[in-house]
Amino acid sequence: MERRGQTLKEWVAIESDSVQPIPCLRQELFRMMALAADKLRDLGAGVDSVDLGSQQMPDGQSLPIPPIILAELGNDPEKPTVCFYGHLDVQPAQKEDGWLTDPYTLTEVDGKLYGRGATDNKGPVLAWINAVSTFRALGQDLPVNIKFILEGMEEAGSVALEELVRREKDRFFSGVDHIMISDNLWISKRKPALTCGTRGNCYFTVEVKCRDQDFHSGTFGGILNEPMADLVALLGSLVDSSGHILIPGIYDQVAPITEEEKTMYENIDLDLQEYQKSSHVEKFLFDTKEEVLMHLWRYPSLSIHGIEGAFDEPGTKTVIPSRVIGKFSIRLVPHMSPSVVETQVKQHLEAVFSKRSSFNKMAVAMVLGLHPWTANTADTQYRAAQRAIRTVFGVDPDMIQDGSTIPIAKIFQDITQKSVMMLPLGSVNDGEHSQNEKMNRWNYIQGSKLFAAFFLELSKQHSRQ
Image (tube, rainbow, N blue to C red):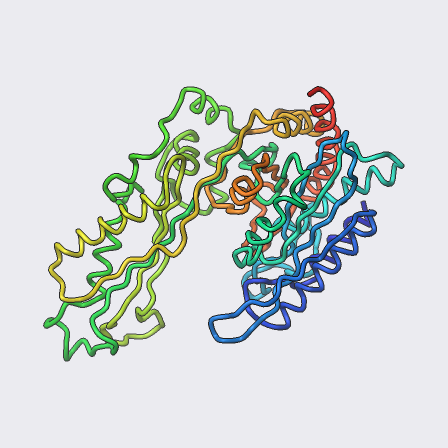
């Protein structure tokens, strides 16, 4: 285990930040991908580092895109083939942001491995590799054929990945039976989970413009429609204080709740008081575990994110912004459609704006429209994963959903038409994207055992068919 921990330390030490478009960070991403490719070659895998060219940035600079790794280990037609997806890039991190340790030095404190990428997603990728190397170390044949697809741009929107998946549909993915992702978290600190759905996301901008130059409020205040006042009224019309979305028709497509689903929420291991306390909020909008989970997973939510063009610095600048842009998003659930939601949002905001009789100009745009994703939990690999979790952890997993959006799951499912499963390793308090990101050492060790057990169970399920 010491050697495996050392490898994670080496990987965390690489500042593979894909979010900031800086040449030196792109070099670090290339170094990270090369290190991972070498690790897979050491396992005996055939590795192809696919050159993806360059990315044109808004400021005019051109940056190289780190390669996507396609690796294969085993081609026995009698065995099932499972493909693991992971990413090796990370969100930005600096110690001054509030980290207690250097974010790029893996540091163990009380059994917790702190470092950027420890849980998202370098730790889970290495746990999968460690599971493969366990069979090698024991001199045993792998019970499954394994493929890897590893990228270095997930945190920046998976640049070029979808195009590659389409291109490789009939080659790399042709013999794949199952695709597995381990890039999210349990809902609990203690109990493992399988993720069977994620929410989609529609991201909107709404612009209100009067002219190209800001106004002095003493000279113009009181004699014109102020864009900020219009925008505040528009944003205030979207959601009420109880979290209920006020856009007409927005709930019409939401799938009705079933008795089976209600029972699922009751069985989820979630201490609501502990969850609220660890979240550092005074009170949630709902009082029961079931209501909280339903509003995280099976009902849409609307969040207001920010305003461009407003004066947001310290001080008392008496400006009337001439042009402001509000940003908000709606998390989608089955069976909501981004195109329908786009129409509903635009009609609603146009109606609200019309009632204000403003002389300003308003423009609404949907800049992102991602569908929700739902898995088939009766599929072979979900059954195999449930058995593996029972073997390694001694309990049945929580069957959870994820309130966030993980587009790659639906991309894989739609393009390859293969079964996709999410098997998280991280605990609910791992702090991915946040300060002091960590993975419990126990989760990391058990994760390798879990993946190895999953290989065996998948092989058994395959032989029964």
